[in-house]
Image 1 (tube, rainbow, N blue to C red):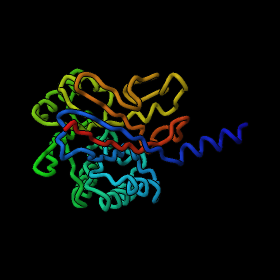
Image 2 (cartoon, rainbow, N blue to C red):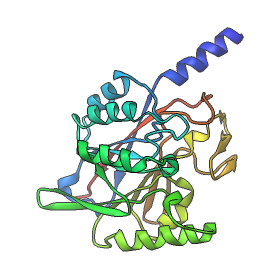
Image 3 (spheres, rainbow, N blue to C red):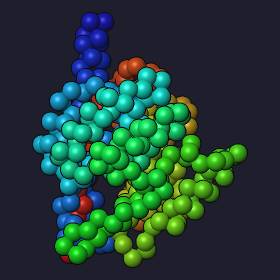
Length: 266
């Protein structure tokens, strides 16, 4: 029994699940019908070798987004991170927002320079227009709230809301990259259309019929750990992530590559 459990845990920690989402919205231009986004989150210097890159190549994404914690602040290795990034750049353009682990790094500026020198689009409270056949969508990147100067959580939430409001375009389809799923209310209030997040690691240990056990900044039995959450005009997708940090293993919680396909009504 123990041997079987050990084999199962090993298998689920060394494999990657691809989760596909199709997102429909009247604001998505016809030129972007079928536009595919591969999301990598919470990589944490995990050494996947060719496995992750092979899966991404098979999906043929139009862009790749990295939603924070590319590295781990407790065992930082820029070499592993950049090996992955340089391989990913051969597949599609890469857009990156930093997570809370990057916020802890004394050498984050060094990592940022390496990413930008490689051709990564680093979005720190910035937006970029993605243009296709004269149509465009608005891609917004919000740096992790740990970068914000704050003395209380309500100030942090206000800072995120204010930043979002300044970057979203009400006449366009808006995609937001941000590490934190627990800020769902702020994304909804700002009327972001699609938000791609991570941070929760799927709850680390997933209990059948209950969900994740624990997540940073949400505590035990967190609400936002995986999947798609929708309210009003906002869809938020939470990646379970691809690496680990404080806890070295996952249980009932396979690492995940998220692939999102945009679907136009026209």
